Amino acid sequence: MGSMVALKQLAGIIFAVIFLSIVGAIYINYSRGSAKSNFEHDAESLAQQICLLADQSENTMWIFNIDVPADCGLQFDNKFVVVIVDNVYTYHDVGISVDGPMVSGRQVELTLRRTGNGVTISE
Image 1 (cartoon, rainbow, N blue to C red):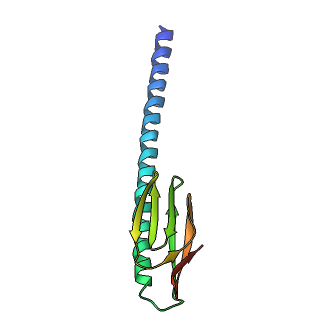
Image 2: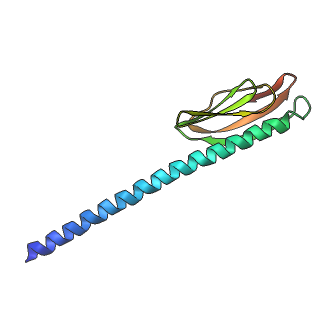
Image 3: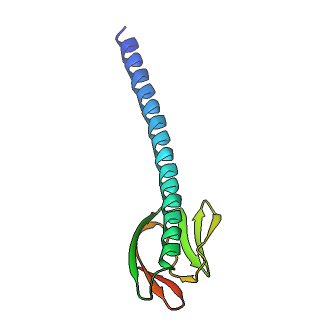
């Protein structure tokens, strides 16, 4: 009889571990999706800031903070802010020449500077 109680307790512990593993996996998946969504929104805001900076005088400088998830990327190509999520490239036309580094997998503070040729971005 004592072994039946022990088996029931063991079964309960196994069920609890499986349940917590499933909940943990769902939370991690949700967090990753949320981070990617936030990144895409922030990258679009960055493109809008570059468009606004285009109307400013030369040497105007703004700071922009963005968190780029590990499996995402941000780069600048001619007149585009390029957002990479799950190997899908989205191009945001900013209407002005933009030059800057490629960023992936980290939080970064970008310096946006209006130059005579467009906008230069640096870390």
